[in-house]
Length: 448
Image 1: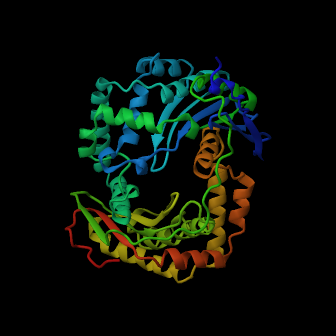
Image 2: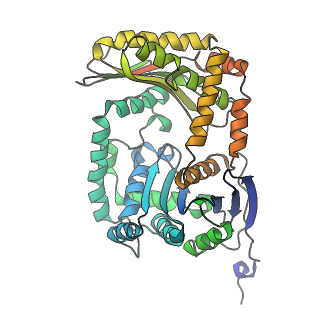
């Protein structure tokens, strides 16, 4: 007797050309039955290929008891699969001169490899095997637990990194976006194999994944290789569906959980971040905010660099930054300086933020900010790995890929009024301050 499942007609994959890529190739997406998305960017002028498997899972998907699990998993998946040991994985990639690595962020994890174009099939096979078939043994967990704890200790010994994690905690509080990607010593020490393996089984499902490939590649060949690598993991009877449209429009900004957070540490340098809620990655004003950030603290001609470093020599590193998430964002300025100069540097940072919030950026500053954004984007896409990252991250975050020319056009379209509006909104929000250095808990009360 034929089962009802077997009697269902097999669904067909859907393929669509998305954009003409700089360099003579094209960007193409195929959605396989079951939902797995494949996006490629052809770069005929190179001899390399870069492969990424993107999982839409990051630290904000964790409950407090699972804090750090996404990053822990990133480590564990390299420890071996049902058919390959950790040494097999490493030696196979080394034998072809390939690079194999991964990274975890707040909202996604990516496993990637870059190889010669002739070794594309091998790279896809290994990356997919690691993502889909990790063994996650108790022994590997015990070994890698120590590695992750060392990584946390290394972060704690780097005040420039620590102050950014503390800023997120002060801004978002106990919400998932406020917790560090690495987790905490307590959470990593208590995670069990059952918790980690259960999280892996629930979250690492092919229907939500994206495979992105860029380089000297042919889209049809990539689809064939991905089908083979994911054989048996996709339901051929389920229809392939186009990604759901991304949310759009401004998101409501919150109030920082803390006004001031000080981590007392006997460092030779004070590390400071002043900032506030920013814009979500879906906010159409994000391009104006990017131009604002570039003009305020994005380069050697920026206001912060000129005022703090060039005119007064108070800091070596000073810059602004902006991060957008699905439903929130953060904006901040950072400086590292001698502890005795912290008050003066902080006063200058706050003064420049207030000035820009009042709409004082000139047309020339805005034009330089736009030019810096354009240059940073284009010059950062000169190799297959960066192209793979752009299309994969865009597909995961937006369910679509914005063409490079379209991105540049949106930057060009930003007006001084757009920047002034973004500045008044974002920089006018309630701020918080985080400091790492040789200070007391209340040394900066009321500073922002």
